[in-house]
Length: 433
Image 1 (cartoon, one colour):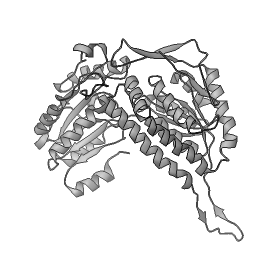
Image 2: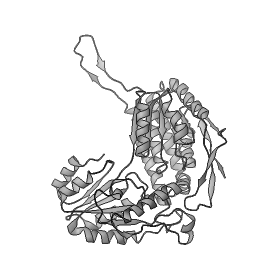
Image 3: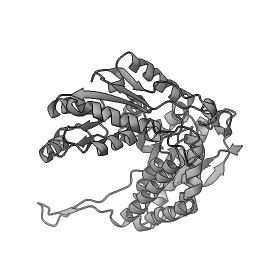
Image 4: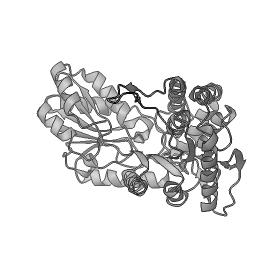
């Protein structure tokens, strides 16, 4: 059984809290990896104080030297790629190739970000006054709060930590309580790369407890959050009251538009991968397929063919193509939306929990496809975060654009067509990004 520790002031320390939650394998609920501490308010305040003190000296370190830490972390993570990928699969449940792909994506991010230490620059302008000089330079803000989710627990912490510390800030990371070991391994890469005491801190716990302490601490000058809409709006409102910088990346209800002149096999393959990959647990997952009526039947048949080839099971097994939902709560939410969908649209496949054989021990939703979905249906407008695809049939491109923009989300979207004029119009009018 693992013991998960906080990283505060340059030391790995066990939490003094007497409260914890089990870190359960979502593919096998009989297996627990360890107990995640629900850290105390005092422990979070200690991490913030450590970051605040370290900022005084870290901000004076030349940016290229700060970036060297990121470059060395990139090298170290590359050496540990297999280990980190396996930890990610064990905790979060995505299949091993997807986990290793996430680590590789993280390596690409770190390699790129490491060069930013030599690209930090301001600009100069001619002044309207004699013997006056007008110029700007980029200055670090101070302590940055990083609150990260469970679905990309390697990439998201890394892409927040790297630019923050290169710019001269110090950070306190509050990762998801569902992926503690993965978060620790990410931080260890930076620590082993030589990050000084206090520059990077990690505190395990609940967002509603230590997360609240973090975002409201007067020492914190910026907050970066990735997660749900409800929590993001709360964080934004709380931090903005103090006038600090806030960045929130929240939910999505991402459409793929498929027109009658599209390369249909290509669109079908992309839709299936986008909808069912990572068990639909991506903020950029394809959850709405907006398809022109003239090709909709063929499109649905093609996606169903892809869906029936999906094998859900142990994410460590080579033959598995879809892992479990991350938690009981997440699976329950997905199943509830499946039931809602049955009353709103035509169920073509799935709509239930998988319980055959070893699946009975895990949290496996069946990949699900609904057809003839109304644009205003709940399954077409609310984030589900599971392997559930809604097919919405439209007459033409104008209607497709109207439907695509008919949700509160605007994270990502796709268009499949061979009409260049429509591509350009889509780029201008899609409420995405």
